[in-house]
Image (cartoon, rainbow, N blue to C red; front, side, top):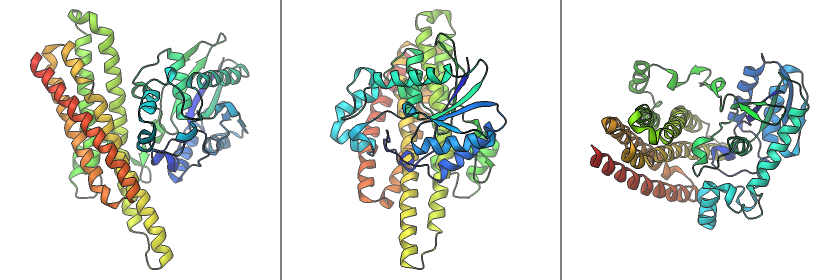
Length: 418
């Protein structure tokens, strides 16, 4: 049976604004088209037997970029579309939480056992159609063939949850798929599936005209870039890198514990936690570069002409959009740090006390990274439209309360066990 390359579409404006898209037909933005081009270039040397796509334009345009170098036509299938999210589509998470707080939080943490969005699609039914369409595509191809399937982040996450037969409360920690990333599945004749690479995004590791990404620099080079007096990389990038180091130390603590016979009873839990921490580390490293890219867009927008009323209008719109993105990226950095900080109390209570100093350093790096990220959010708030600013203030307050509580609990548990 073939290898199915599940590929999330390129970025849209709603992605950058953290709006729930569902089946709303939102096109790629300029960044999404750059991502699709990089993906197409990466796959140009592969032997593809076919290219399938969701009917939604953001997936279809990505698929057309992939299919072009191979001279293939794109085959569309309605069942490759994203989950239908009803009344939540087009809203940001703070907007949804204000109206459907408990319902949304339960759905987000445990979609399998939660009611769908109002007017939306049930998650288990969504998984059923995802698996069925992939089995159909796989059945139409031969052993060893590679087929690109351009779909959606929620689609890939639902498939992976079904394949792994886990419905974790923290499924976003485990199963994040970046725009234009590749997840390889080898489909077997009996519909068993072998998982290859997950969220492979190495082909996107350039920015700013093909320069090496900041996180691919060595430590000396990175520190020199931070110190060179240019606007980027700045505090937001440094905060994300600090968070990534903190997450790495949390993973280290788990692995040190899991490697000792004395802690055999918690080995599986520690290995699972280590995996969670590493995945958040990877996300934070991505956010480090995204932070610099977002601020570069702010600088570009401010350099736009402003001689005529029309130019002023266009410039303001560009500044508003860029400022919103430059605020949302550190907000994501903060949320990632909180996710790892919340792991610390339970780990400290059950882990190897000889490595608690490493866990403490990890916690304090994550806390510092969180504070730095929130400082970058706060400095951008005055530049945002009032409605956007109010939403982000709500989320900032919510995250800060979570972080403070988890960090205090983590410190108490570490100190109790030292």
